[in-house]
Image (cartoon, rainbow, N blue to C red; front, side):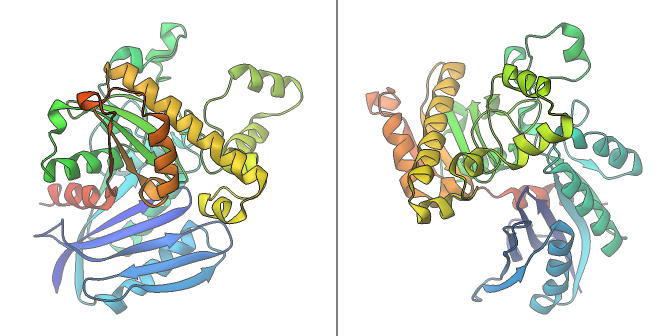
Length: 372
């Protein structure tokens, strides 16, 4: 038997995983996941070193089925593993959790109380914990938080202009995609890029999207806030919106459930295009509505990067990550063109880089740190 670590990473429309030996958490034995979860055409992909990827369509699948399919497929690729630690990506840690923690009943209860703040993600992360503890009861389970990377940013980037008692009660700008940002920073450092000396905007663009300001290796601002709704337009999420619109809709008869459905599930690229929340579908459609949705998306990214440049007092580099950021060269070019007026380094504009986010590596490292 080989002692191993497992990373489980539940996103809003995906479930990713990675397996690695305890002694070498940065070298994956098997990895992959399920994409397009909840969309009727989910696809399972498994990868292993020196093997061709194995892809299988599994049709309609929620996160529970996606996890079941993954766990059923793994032994066929890599038998004889003793899972000693499991790292779980949890989107919202609230004000309490600013570093990875070992999962206990008290921790699970605290995370469940945060479900209303991240309804697209938190339930799936909790389901991953529940299923993981059932499948691997002897393993150490560790919760790792997307909000943790942004903890400690300046108060002016953390607070809303509400009475102070609301901040004290936990209503603040938490920010998300922190594990992705942390992995990007580590990857840049491994390339020899002087992260500690630079002002960097990380544009993590996927089904969920954000731009984070990283100065001297630390988050000093981010586009997302109290929930994962704020900032950029996303696959099905609206991004920044005048709160007065919500007051108007409430007066028109929308209750909290209707607003949640509208803002989380019916807006963003899907709402703008009337076609899909997936950028690949919009590129293939090529309709006027699809082109307008893409233009809106690009414009908001440019604006948000400029805001982050203001937060940092300059901008040396913009780093793209996430499914859109890593794969859609036309989107990257359009954003870069819109930012060409910024001075950047040596007056040549910001350096543009692409770095694949590796949240699973951070989850595996955290799980190893908690092993006895």
